[in-house]
Image (cartoon, rainbow over all chains, first blue to last red; front, side, top):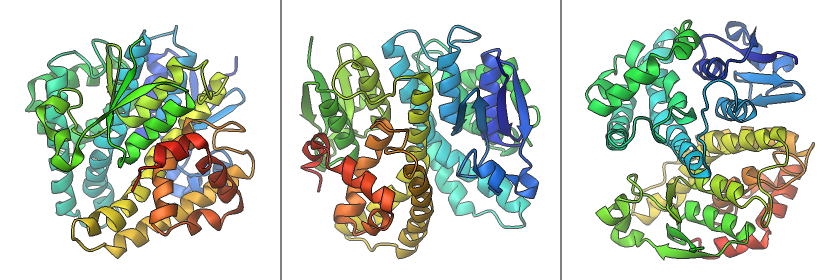
Length: 214
Length: 214
């Protein structure tokens, strides 16, 4: 079997998500570097793989796939019997995994990403952080994590008492908020959220996937 | 088998999405009205079902599930042998369905929803449409639909030559843009996008699900 190719970049949070999933599934892969600093992701060769011009994209045999959340779902399904099961055993467990994956995508990621952009990308490009955006999005995250606190008081992980794609999806942006963004109190100030964060962020697979994140 | 309960409202785009999926799967269901005008979605009885206080939420036997995209995925999986197959047959087809579902959730929905809010909800509440937001989000949709045009020149639907969850997910907000929002040219001006829109929006299941949308 040919090795899975990951076209990505170690500084990309979405690439880190896919790499962590590959580690959890004990899969071998080749990381094909897309040189973001020279804009390689917007050149015809890469756009032929992914018309959106963003990383990552994977190639697994004949299949070319982009959108990191779709990639990890595919890997978790295709290799369900191998490594960590990330999907849940029953249809109901799987539905709850999907539900909390949607919560991440629709409610956690947008404000977390805005804060990352405003506090990291904008200053790196010589701009000035818009503090009003940061404040508004921090308020959204505070409310959201109150809901997580309630949920995580009832089960160890978001979808139940098993680590799943739903937890995994939070790692890249949460890592930024805690480690570089100075927003760790969002997690530390809530007992059950803190225990969850300590647990998921200390997984060796994530440490390996995230080691080159800026 | 007890009937599936849908806690929702016929004016809600996310409820319409779930209803359309139920129709495609030829499932019987009971619509339990959540009276949005009196704020019933924020009261303890509903928050016990869905801590986010938004519609819809379904109950199917012992399972309570929210997030409309997770709900339709669950219905499509559980009842795969019944009604329209919305998932794809092979693992690769299913991965492409998930990929285009993510494109809808991350790239189509956010600007489309902002336009809906600015041109419908804000004026309804006595506010003034922020035309700068509408302009910026229209530009995002123009670029996105250029990518769709290219994709739909190669296959009839987004994930391939079969109607799937990925197409279905576009219906509620696209319906608003075309029918009430005056943004139909986004679709009509692109040959393949127009043919796709004509096809998916004329499905009887969607007409039934959408008949009460404002």
